[in-house]
Image 1 (cartoon, rainbow, N blue to C red):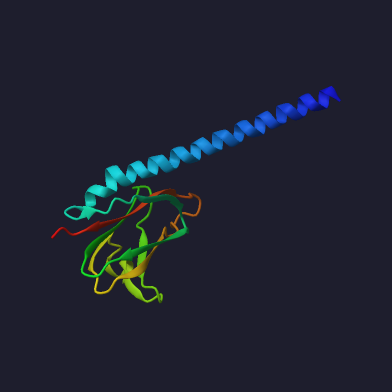
Image 2 (cartoon, rainbow, N blue to C red):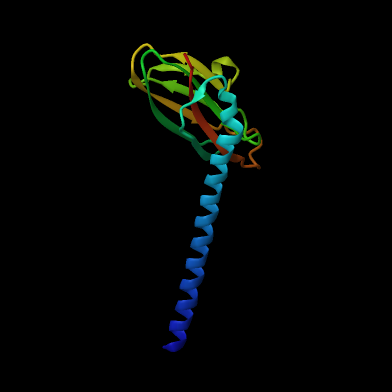
Length: 153
């Protein structure tokens, strides 16, 4: 009985330790991604003023993320979608609340940004996808940042 308890205690310690390592690696990756958004992506908003929100996550090939954002009438915005250099060119689309297409960067050579004026206050959706690479043997992933800037008057 004593042997079983010791064995179980060792196993729980191992599982707990493994969980902590995975947790801290995950937190570290997200922190690095936020650092990428601040250091690399944010300067590309210039001359627009960053809105203060750092939307960044790790995506792999074939994965998609959707971000909802309220934009306000009379404002001019710059949307920037930037991934680390290891990723293929990112595909992003901007949709209105009725899923109507407002912008698709595949129609403009996969541009990383879009400047637009807002005619009516509304919520938009930014859908970002990492296309599958031609090489199926290598699975690529990395940080993707989605930032908004406002034009100064």
